[in-house]
Length: 388
Picture 1 (cartoon, rainbow, N blue to C red):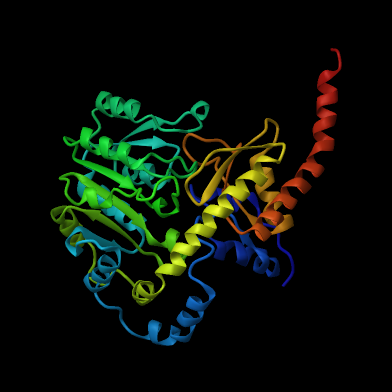
Picture 2 (spheres, rainbow, N blue to C red; picture 1 turned 180 degrees about the horizontal axis):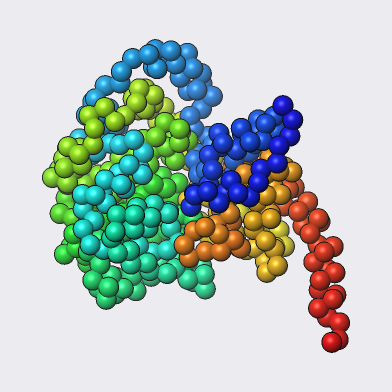
């Protein structure tokens, strides 16, 4: 198979990026070289040895039914040191967002934007009012909790969502501030803290509020194992809440909603805690190095992040859609252009943190794009400077 160009239309089919599988099929032989800076997962976990173990057991894993979700969730609870009664496990965090909307979002939901699209799209699809609190570029997309609480009160929102760290900017709120936020909103129907990227935080030692959610009447903490463990394809996530809320979610979900591969990975984790912690250390190291490299590019403004990704704004006159298409078609580098995110434009790009060899390829592609673009840009500037 030869080289195939990926058209812009593929990126306009949904509010999310196309899958790597779809891109690889469209790109033919070049798809094998695709480097994914788009889908935010951990590049250092599982280790090659873990993948080899999974490969050796693949036939056994795929041939038989998994255990029921209670058995798998029980093992995860033991691994995390949580009471199994406070946990509900699902086929990805988006399944939990969907069922939270059906179970607990009755009238309205408040959410800072920009953020993960399903938090706005899901309730709008079911006719709820979505109260969007705008995060300002002027503030580097930092969330002012007092302003957000005042907004929730003014709008009389019945559910409040907080994504920490936020996606796509990686903004992080300290644990003490999240606890205060939860305590100030005890009268709401529900407060959701989405901690899908919390394991990547290195600003403080114990950033999660999951154990605190378990003793509150109206708080749910959402987790995404696929992002942390580098296994988006397995599709597994969980929530932590008080036993009453968690039990209601468990009763709603199908009994066999988790697959055998998810079960195998969960039971492997007890033997690979050291490798997982090392993967987080390596990722934090790479986040700093990658941020430093991207900040040196003349057309990039890099925002601070505690996630496993970095948000970048392009200089005026640089088209993010053109850069995305150039990178994927000329360099087989897949990035997230944020023009279809509420509260953003195509001047913003999100880059997943990856090892230095991959970052070098990304930087080379960006620099090649600049060399290609600047002759035309300089000509336009010269023309604009001529007297009328």
